[in-house]
Amino acid sequence: MKLFKKFAAAALAAALAVSMAACSGASSAPASSAPAGSQPAGEGYRIAIVQQMDHASLDEIRRAIEAELDAKAAELGVSIEYAEVNGQNDATMLGQIGTQVVSDKYDAVIPIATLAAQCMQTATEGTGIPVVFAAISDPEGAGLTAQNVTGTSDALNTAFILDMMLAQNPDIQAVGLLYSLSEANSTKPIAEAKEYLAAKNIKVVEGTGNTNDEVLAAVNNMLDQVDAVFTPTDNVV
Image (cartoon, rainbow, N blue to C red; front, side, top):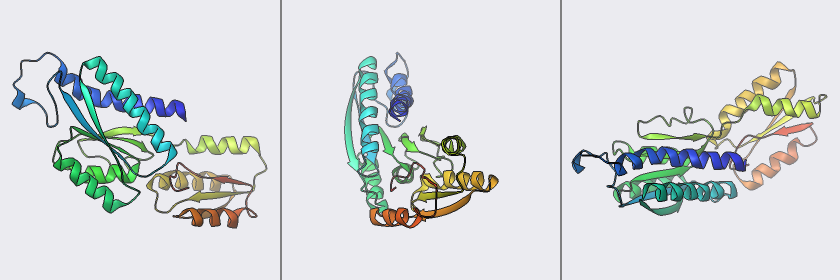
């Protein structure tokens, strides 16, 4: 997981660096022809990092992104000023953050996790402000396809994970699928898991929850019914 996070941070930094390098390289083009949000060489960039919620994994991704961008800024001879904002997993709050990011004319926004990315895409529509997301399992399924939006995916190889489960215990007869109905990241891998398990005639027991208490209750309800439990990269779970 840590290796992926470092790779994701580097990829995000590289995506933003394309714009930064284009601005900092030698060019005779007038300033008015520069893309929205760009800065001349030697000046600074203002980047908003919008984290969907408090979460140890998302915190680590944010720190890794900043470290990679600081290294890229030093390489290009520019400075970066960060605004770190947390949406507390609330769509209304994230929408307000997006409005403020656009109003304050940040050069780019980096949303971490699906809901944050969706809200930033909506807020920046038509502005040209780059949105470079992280920690999205299914970007296309989440509708993150606007022209100004790109990023990295942490999609699971669901079949590979379930293969490992059966390698550990070939006699598994029932598998619990634990996920949150409110978490977009879970939709695709849960569908893949159901298809995989059905093909092997393995019983599926679903457990869902949108809060800590609901998740714990779902676990307790399935423990005496299953031989193993699968959960995707679900922030709630």
